[in-house]
Image (cartoon, helix red, strand yellow):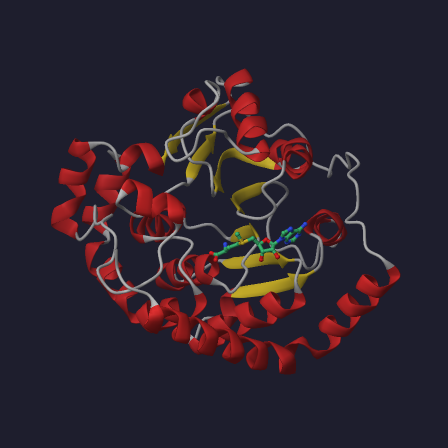
Length: 315
Ligand SMILES: C[S@@+](CC[C@H](N)C(=O)[O-])C[C@H]1O[C@@H](n2cnc3c(N)ncnc32)[C@H](O)[C@@H]1O
C-alpha cells in the first residue's frame, strides 16, 4: 500500500527518470525496473539528511538516490567503494547527471573506512544514528556478519535499510530457497536469521515478493510501474532473468521499529581482505591513476560489450 501510494504521489517525477536511459545503457542496471523506481520513491519518501551506501560500483543506485535527494532539495550520500576505478566511475556518473554535489565517494574497504569516518564528527553530517542505510556490496556470510553486528545496532528508530540481492522475503529464505535460485547466498541466510530472530524490532517488504503480487502490479501500472518484462532489445539478460522470463527484482526493504541499540561504533572484528605484496602495490597504483585510467578502461569495456551485443540473438 505504501509503495502504491508513493507511485501516485510522485508519478510525474518518476517519469523524469527516463533522462538516465542512456547512462543506464553504459553503466549497467543492477537495479532494474520496479526496484529502481522503488529506490527513488523510498528516498523521496524518507527524505534523509544522510544516506550511507555500500557500494556504488558505477553509480547506478547512487544516481537514483541522488536524484531523489535533489528533488527533495536536501540530503547527502556517503558512499563506500572498494575498487578505485569504480569510485572514479561513480563520481563521473554523478557529474554527468549534474548531481555530484549530492554524494561523496570514499575509496577503500567499507569495514575499515566506515569506523574512521564515523569518528569524524565534522565530516559526519548527521546526528548519531543511521537513518538510511543502502547495502549492495560483498554478498558473503562474513561480510553480512560485519554489517549486522556493527551497523544494524547504529540504525535509528524509524530508520530504513535497503539490502540488494536478497531474492525472497526472510521467511522463504529460512526454508532454504529463494524465488530465483535453489540455495540462498551466505548473506541472505545470515540476514534472514537475524531478522526472524528480532521480528519485533524490524518489519520488511521484499520487492521480489511484490512483483509476484497481481494486486500490487495492477495498483502501480496506471503510474508507470509494474513493468517487469524482459526488454525486447537484444540486451544480454541475466541467466535467472532468462529462466523466469522477466527482470529480477531482489531488494529487501527493512524498517527499524525498536530504539537504536548503540551510539558508538561497536567495533566487532573482521578479517581484512588478504592481498599479496604485488596485489597491494597494484591497488595503490590504481588509487593514484583511477581518475585518468577509469574512463580508458570503461571505453574499452563498452566497445567489447557493444561487439558482443551485436553478435547476440534474442532467444
Ligand atoms: C553489486 S556491486 C554494486 C552495484 C551498485 N549498487 C549498482 O547499483 O550498480 C558490488 C560493489 O561492492 C564493492 N565492494 C565489495 N566489497 C567491498 C568492501 N569490502 N568495501 C567496499 N566496497 C566493496 C565492489 O567493488 C562492487 O563495486
